Length: 332
Image (cartoon, rainbow, N blue to C red):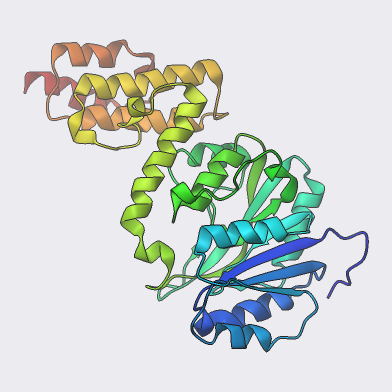
């Protein structure tokens, strides 16, 4: 174990607990057993009615900062409380049903210490479910910035954040985005700092029926759609509804021309502004462009003209077979 000293960055590990007795002992043990030892472990009991408090108090470690909410504040208020208490240079998230592997904090601190332009770093995770699979999203900033427009590419309890990225923010986790509060925060941070995922699996992440993401999946989807619209609208200064088809939202209400215009508008804007960097968005839109034509049952002559005259078509590497497939649609 690394001994703490003045040269090591202090990390504040924040773990809310609400009736988490079943897996809590493993979660706490995994943090206290980290090879990086210079941390404070803020454990917030959010009105638990099971044995959670008994389990927490069974540990005697000076790095534990135990807080007991007088009532069930729920997750967002509890997280904001923990972040406001944090004294560390970095803040690491942890959930009461997960397990951090021994080198997790060490490797994340090393990354942030050596990459000062980065404000957030996540990791890959081992999924603790029946399939026992691993999950790792994109690792580089450009891909993550793009991915945020379509889904959340971070596992929340795997992240470590540089505390100063929150300077000037009126709110950290926004109560308007209950059950999608992390995704919304990452989209705001993407405007101000670089992000990464370490290409290592440093957290055992539990998926079970009692988990918030399992209980509120429909509501999360609705909020995620709102976050996507807001995120892309900010970058391109367009009305959020103008990109519904790009997100595959409300597809049935749009005509072929409206779908075409959404793809072309976004394609042209990114060419001028280079918002997402590299070819990430172009590759996505080209695939959407192909799908639009190939999946259409029939095409008018005007719609076919859109196809043959567009610069996107010439960037799409169509095969002869695909070109013929599109052409014959005008005779149906």
